[in-house]
Image 1 (tube, rainbow, N blue to C red):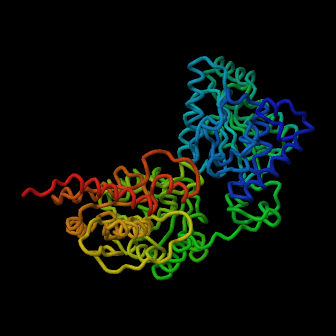
Image 2: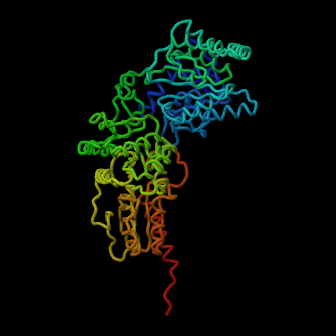
Image 3: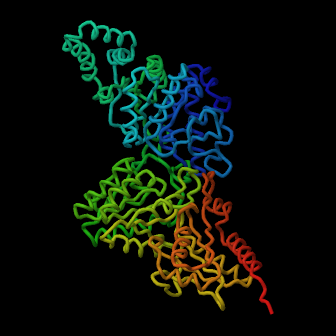
Length: 625
């Protein structure tokens, strides 16, 4: 049946009796696809019936459906003509793991950073209203996205416009409420979104404006009776109409609630209770996160295939060791306890771990408070999510010279999750923060070494970044250059100084071997700390004909630019070439594939540097007799 679905109109044509079969086929496809390559399985198993109901009630793309976060959109993709190719989800050339405008007109925004959908919906609905369009903006928010402050800012603004055509579906998979049961409760839910009832209340309020107590009593009675048989309706305290809670796996109940909300023509919350991992026993029984985002796994057992030792493991283990040595060490995560490796620290020190939800801004300012109180916080986030807390890092942490260590996981090219998850911005934005020190380890041993150095800093903030994937085996230094590690010494007269930032040190070593074969001698250094830069770089650069900085970050404003500025300020007239990530949004693919595409491999570097050296040599005029 799923194979015959080319779009929402096909979903609308199905009979009620056919819908359970469709839901079952969708779950089979989800499990099969995610078992091969991994993906956000648990959240999508939980929104199957909800998504079917959305596409039977609303007219996508005329009524835009915005997902928050976008990793809940797999079922939406399957129902909007993307069954073919779904088996290559998140693979190079295949479908994105998030909404993608390039894939379908049904994907309005490409949102994968959480808590944004309500603001999108607010703007869309206001545009529809101004243009006189009879369209509804639909926002599906859940899987933790309501813990972000931006969502509540949007709710406050949406509630201020009583005729704004916005339907907000809260996908509540936290199992914190029980569904509303019984005819009276259903009737009262209908009453809440009955326009005639609202008109009656407005009429009464207008006629007896001098007796506000009577109006308040009428409105309060309706609200009070509802509260007796349903959970506390906090959304109505914000001025939003509320329907629910609804069993999110009862497709017909969801349709009825969504139709009520759509027809009200004002902002309405539809509260759907769903079960993460629904329909796949290993996910339902997975205590940690109901298969939120597993890697490839065995479909029959749910056993995840071994990933090997990754960078996060090294950080995780060392933080626990440090925690045992220092009672002032605390850790903060923004809803990423397991992905950022803080779970072992939480088990060992349950009173010294703080999961703030999807609230990176709060995480940094709370860390500032902890530091002011005599603690040393370690804030672990994905590198891409630091963007959301830049102001707090700058004005709340750095301005006060507070000892806060920010650990940036998934830095540089991450690959599979697409443009929004590549951690390619941090080395650029961190350059402008006064007093901040930034370390980039090249291998697992340097993670341990530099993390210890970072938390030992007591007069200002520090940051440590490392990439996604298998950790690089130890790359031993052959000497020191100031506080930098000298990894390779040029033989004979030195031609090129290769500055390898973090994991790019190995890439530089690979390139140096190939350059040797071309008669170009190369020195390779690992700065270890890239902010501030070691002054020993100045004389080292002066002894070479060319400096090449290689970094796993956007080329603009990062380490390469900092090196060039350092040399200019010291009046060292040696050309500097920066090799990094092009300043554009990258398509999803494996990390290694993307590094190859953008020229960050040893072979590509050697070729480009050889060309640069040849060009420079050709510009040197022959000596006159």
